Length: 413
Ligand code: GLV
Ligand code: MN
Ligand code: MN
Image 1: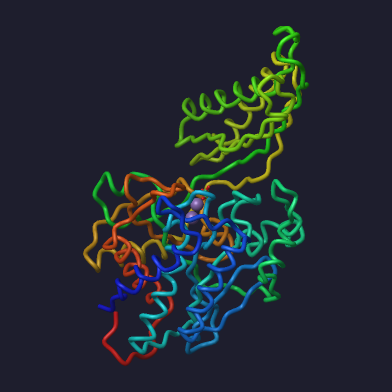
Image 2: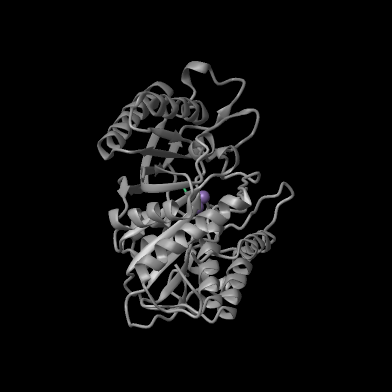
């Protein structure tokens, strides 16, 4: 059975991780920054060395293509090269490097596939600097208009349009249809490691609803202002944080709730804070329960608003329902794991992935591999080389099954 070059894959991941490397062994490659450009340039260089043709579209998604024997929609793989501000070496990078390694392996084995093979690096998957999250794949799938996405600003008022132009990745490639989409990713949770399973066969992903919350109170003096008349925006925000946690811990169906960002104004020790901006990230396996969580948050916000004498504005910035991947591609991943003798289990993704939006326009599946302690979105994120290899080998099998082999100079799958 054809195998990837484990060492080459690992070395490419480690080489890429040098771009934006942090002291604690992680990566800070925030989307559309100079460091992101360097990561993109490295990927493009490697793709060209592997004989692929490279295109960039209007939102900066990169598509590298290896020709097939027939003029068919490509079998695509991919993920993202951007990271969280204090991210790890594997989140996103793994899926892109897996695609590249599979192409290199096909080159070495002299395999001609029926359908072209494509490797995609999607823009701003993380959604940390710019919302919406999964912006590149979202635009590609028609979830967001290009102008809408280009017009989004970061907290400093810099637009996606300007940031993209500055790093030289505002391209003009027209969208094309995809025959299938596969994404390999570290699990980012504890299930595979705890159950000593090598391969997660991903059935779909939790739905998400994200909010920008603006709380308007009134700045006032910390001494003379009586407690009963204050309009303390931070007190209201704190109570909302507790409500988000209460909702996520009391609702069923894998409910999750996070406040990960807060900005306090004027942020001075002897001023009652008059303004807070914060975020809410809700997730659930069932759309109806996700909606019920949001209704509960709105009720909580009304109560906190009245009791703290502040205005609370909830603006929804991301919504996608729970997604399901394509049964025949899922079966291909499962059979790949079986054929290679890897332990495997079905799993639902708590994280969002570009695959969620690809599933709307093409048959889609994902492969998960374990990560140490289930920790991700953290500089200490880590994965074992043997698991990294296993996920790529499984995907190679699933991709070949989908793309078809026309000829080979070596005994293949
Ligand atoms: C993507 O990283 C997410 O927030 O799930
Ligand atoms: Mn990711
Ligand atoms: Mn991530």
